[in-house]
Length: 303
Image (cartoon, rainbow, N blue to C red; front, side):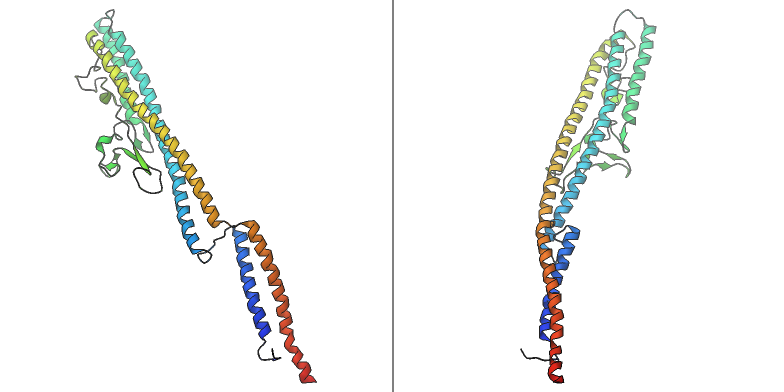
């Protein structure tokens, strides 16, 4: 190579090498500081696309688990109210049993009847008052017979009725990502007890001995109807708890897969960082030497 002063090719070549090493050093620094192997699409375009899809699914699964937990809270609210209704039905049967014996006269049965109807009214009040986040649970709004096939229907744009869709998956497949909760009507009229029910209902009244004897059978049927609702809710709660376990396992496995794609291997990257740091320092030193070499021409010119 000729000794020239217009173009210092050794310095140019050294500067190009220095820029390459410094760029790699900057990339290693970014990866170590962020903890991510992929910080931009330029690092790994395909890996970035897979990572973002996985992150979206992870977020959706975690929210799905929270949705399922909210549904469990709803079910527990309904079940707690049904437990109180259960107590009222037991009291109704006790009153019917009392009124069915012949040792009481009509006046005394009317006193029993008064409490009987009050208990029936209380059942209706509890059914109408029980709600979760503004959704009434036991008044028939969540029964399935008002469902239009697309989720919960809307009667007036404000009041939601029909079976409730609980969504927990990351897509929208009915077999994998959601199912419905239905809760039957547990008002006194729906259970067939008290004077709010149809006049032909077996448990309509206990004002006479004969009516009280019929009421015993009617109250039994009301208890069975209520127990079917509670059993259904219990099964749904167990199912949701299993769903939450599965969602958490899915999210954990996806998180592990996302980590393998996206996260930096600190040990490997630190080795690369030290290598690039040494190469950069060496290139800086050689650039300094290369920049001073043309000064040798001054010796010839001066000589």
